[in-house]
Length: 90
Image (cartoon, rainbow, N blue to C red; front, side, top):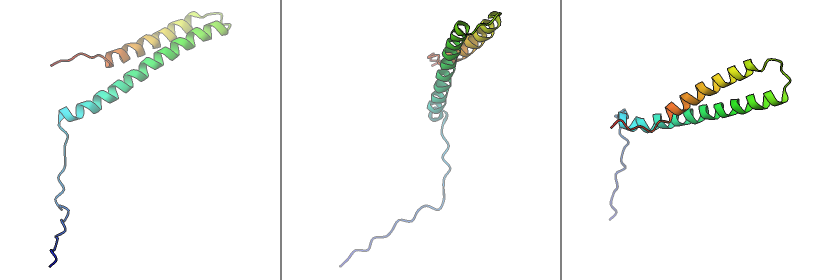
Protein backbone atom coordinates (compact mmCIF):
# COMPACT_ATOMS: atom_id res chain seq x y z
CA UNK A 1 0.00 0.00 0.00
CA UNK A 2 1.36 3.25 -0.94
CA UNK A 3 0.36 6.40 0.81
CA UNK A 4 -0.60 9.28 -1.23
CA UNK A 5 0.99 12.62 -0.44
CA UNK A 6 -0.87 15.71 -1.25
CA UNK A 7 1.13 18.46 -2.76
CA UNK A 8 0.74 21.68 -0.94
CA UNK A 9 -0.53 24.37 -3.20
CA UNK A 10 0.94 27.83 -2.95
CA UNK A 11 -1.37 30.29 -1.37
CA UNK A 12 -3.19 32.38 -3.90
CA UNK A 13 -3.85 35.20 -1.49
CA UNK A 14 -0.61 37.11 -1.35
CA UNK A 15 -0.35 39.22 1.70
CA UNK A 16 1.50 42.46 1.53
CA UNK A 17 4.09 42.62 4.21
CA UNK A 18 4.75 46.05 5.55
CA UNK A 19 7.74 46.63 7.73
CA UNK A 20 7.17 48.23 11.04
CA UNK A 21 9.05 51.37 11.96
CA UNK A 22 11.44 49.38 14.15
CA UNK A 23 12.27 47.07 11.26
CA UNK A 24 12.88 49.94 8.84
CA UNK A 25 15.20 51.76 11.24
CA UNK A 26 18.34 49.62 10.63
CA UNK A 27 18.16 50.34 6.89
CA UNK A 28 17.87 54.06 7.48
CA UNK A 29 20.72 54.00 9.99
CA UNK A 30 22.92 52.05 7.59
CA UNK A 31 22.30 54.52 4.76
CA UNK A 32 22.80 57.41 7.12
CA UNK A 33 26.13 55.97 8.29
CA UNK A 34 27.28 55.44 4.70
CA UNK A 35 26.38 59.01 3.79
CA UNK A 36 28.18 60.28 6.88
CA UNK A 37 31.31 58.30 6.01
CA UNK A 38 31.16 59.64 2.45
CA UNK A 39 30.90 63.26 3.61
CA UNK A 40 33.78 62.86 6.04
CA UNK A 41 35.90 61.36 3.26
CA UNK A 42 34.98 64.28 0.99
CA UNK A 43 36.13 66.69 3.69
CA UNK A 44 39.47 64.86 4.00
CA UNK A 45 40.05 64.78 0.24
CA UNK A 46 39.22 68.45 -0.27
CA UNK A 47 41.44 69.45 2.66
CA UNK A 48 44.29 67.41 1.21
CA UNK A 49 43.65 68.83 -2.26
CA UNK A 50 43.71 72.40 -0.98
CA UNK A 51 47.01 71.86 0.82
CA UNK A 52 48.67 70.08 -2.12
CA UNK A 53 47.34 72.59 -4.66
CA UNK A 54 48.63 75.51 -2.65
CA UNK A 55 52.08 73.90 -2.40
CA UNK A 56 52.50 73.01 -6.06
CA UNK A 57 50.57 75.73 -7.84
CA UNK A 58 51.98 79.22 -8.21
CA UNK A 59 48.87 81.22 -7.55
CA UNK A 60 49.03 84.89 -6.76
CA UNK A 61 45.91 84.94 -4.61
CA UNK A 62 45.63 81.76 -2.55
CA UNK A 63 43.10 83.22 -0.14
CA UNK A 64 40.14 82.31 -2.40
CA UNK A 65 41.39 78.72 -2.59
CA UNK A 66 41.69 78.54 1.19
CA UNK A 67 38.31 80.18 1.89
CA UNK A 68 36.29 78.08 -0.56
CA UNK A 69 38.14 74.87 0.31
CA UNK A 70 37.78 75.31 4.05
CA UNK A 71 34.11 76.28 3.67
CA UNK A 72 33.39 73.04 1.83
CA UNK A 73 35.46 71.05 4.34
CA UNK A 74 33.65 72.54 7.33
CA UNK A 75 30.19 72.05 5.83
CA UNK A 76 30.74 68.43 4.73
CA UNK A 77 32.52 67.51 7.95
CA UNK A 78 29.77 69.06 10.07
CA UNK A 79 26.99 67.26 8.19
CA UNK A 80 28.95 63.99 8.33
CA UNK A 81 29.49 64.26 12.06
CA UNK A 82 25.87 65.17 12.73
CA UNK A 83 24.73 62.10 10.79
CA UNK A 84 27.02 59.82 12.80
CA UNK A 85 25.83 61.02 16.17
CA UNK A 86 25.30 58.04 18.46
CA UNK A 87 22.69 59.64 20.70
CA UNK A 88 19.92 57.45 21.97
CA UNK A 89 16.62 59.19 22.45
CA UNK A 90 15.08 56.28 24.38
